[in-house]
Length: 559
Image 1: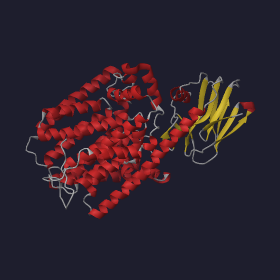
Image 2: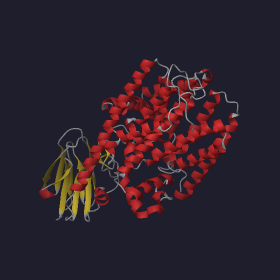
Image 3: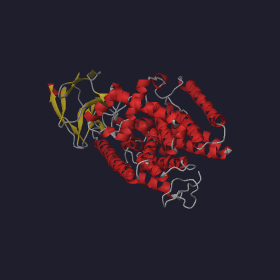
Image 4: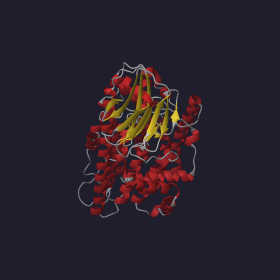
């Protein structure tokens, strides 16, 4: 990508022909990277939780030999695990180096979006390209919904896939301009890297199709469109066919991750409802609304009039864009393309469950698409007069920064509490430890969630503290923690066989297996939900058992 000339003075109308002032190509990415490093600094020790512990076990067990087979995961992620395992092999877990790598990649993704926005208008006389590029890139960079990807250390593939996807788009623009065979090869190299980092990258040909077609008609290119599409997209079709074939041979299913039954369950109403939810979540910061308000909104988008209104508006906008495309200002042409990229990039999760109850969980599902959405928004914003446009941009920037700072604070607090509990465990001399309740999450940020296991805390003792508990450990239930001081009240009855547990404060509820807890039993005890408390009753009383629960980041034993 050559330097993008940008006039920084006067009332310019576009990029074309402006050669006198050039942004330093080293300064802009550095600013984005330094901003990402600064804003995410409080999370430098966080993110090594939940799924990470399972990956750490796999890395310890298989080493480099596990990389080609993605350490047994039902998906083709060798690029992801090469990067993950390389970091682990060099620096181990719980190292601030991970924070640096993730924040730098996020900053680079923002810079690539900034450059992409500038390049779209390079050959047109469209106004305010720098404002458009800066607005889109900074709102993406500082989005509160990026925190899960940048902080949780199992999300490297989201960062890599978006980076490679944007490099594919940049190299496509290079190839369309130069026809260089080197650029052609790099298009497919970056696509292959993205594809074998994360299956989300299957949408990249759709992004490229929109880019090529819109550019062709926007600048009235003299080349044959069909020839360009064939040269670029035909090899990608071959790569995708190879990808599915490897999936079928390796895991017995054409589609990895959750499988074909889930990912190919295409119900148009469900797809549209979910994509509209992501739309209002991103542009309205709706996940941070009061619970009652966001519940009404998202429930309405499932089946109520907001769903049909949203579908009508999207359909009308798309039809008008297509019908009047050649008469539109170049900015509107590319605004439509940007929103098309946004919806195309949401397709992989449009049939998956949409989380909004708390914060953070599954925010990662919107990461790949969010930059394209902000690009479309920024282009539309550029039609407003200068002062209102900049006031709106600054208002959104302040809101984003405030919410992101809050999310990073929650990640930092969750790590502090989790690490304190790991270091405070002191019952290595007992035969059995029963944890009455452990924090599933901190305001939605993952902490000690377990799914289908009798306990997960012993993994943290082994991998984080380096000393596993050798006896039997049980985690009876979990809860959502909202403040570091959240506490429990425990009453013991029936000679130490029955324990009644309730919260000391409002706002918490009981969890198990990542959802609301229900009655269950196993060979050791029965768990029962009551109106204002829960009960755990041993089937037999055993000597050498410690019954514990968390309080202010420390463990308390029931005497």
